[in-house]
Length: 224
Image (cartoon, rainbow, N blue to C red; front, side, top):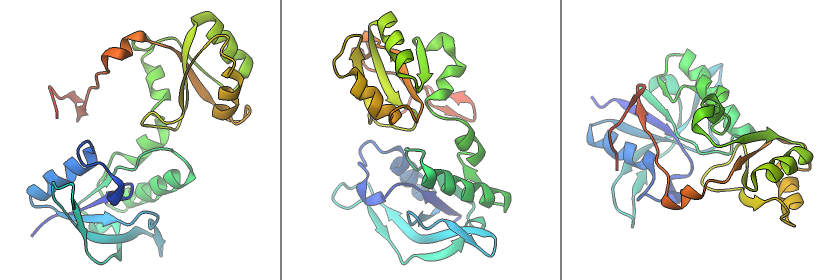
C-alpha cells in the first residue's frame, strides 16, 4: 500500500518546475511509490484539537505544459500522513509562523514533519549566518539609520536586505553617499520599526555562488 506524503508549499500552479527543488522531491517520491497529497494553501488549522488541513490527492509529471493534477480536496488530520514536507517560501510573516505552529502540533500528534517546525521558527535564514562569522563578510543587523550610514562609510559598497525575504526580493546594492540611501533604509526598516541587515559587498559574486546541501548533517557531493 502506498505511503502517504503531504506537502505544504506555495501554490503549485505558480512554480517554475525547471528549478523548483520541491517539485523535484515530489517527482522522486512519486517514482518511489509514495501517495502524494497537496495541502491547499491557507487551509491548515485545528479541528477538536487535531492538527490538519484540506488535502488533495496530487500527481506530478515533468512537463512544463501541465506538471500536476489534483483530486478533490478534503480535510484530513496530518497525523494520518507518513511524512509531511514543509516547503513554503518566505516571507516569514504571521501566516508562515501560524502554519509552522500547526505543523509543530501535528508533529506532537505523531506526524513526521520535515523540516523540523521548531527549527524553522527558531532559525532565521539570514541571522543563521551569524553563527559562522569567519565565513561571512562584515555584517550589521540594526534598525538605526545612523548605524547603517556609519557601516556604509566604513565599508564603501554594501548590500542591504530584509531578514525575511528570499529570491533576491528587497535586496539593495548601495554605497556611502548614495542619494537614495535614506529611502532604502526607510523601505527596509519601515522607518525604523523593523530590523534589517547590511553586509559589505563582495565583487566575487559576479562569478556566481556555491551552495552546500546537507542531508542528515552530511554534505552531498553534487546535485542537479
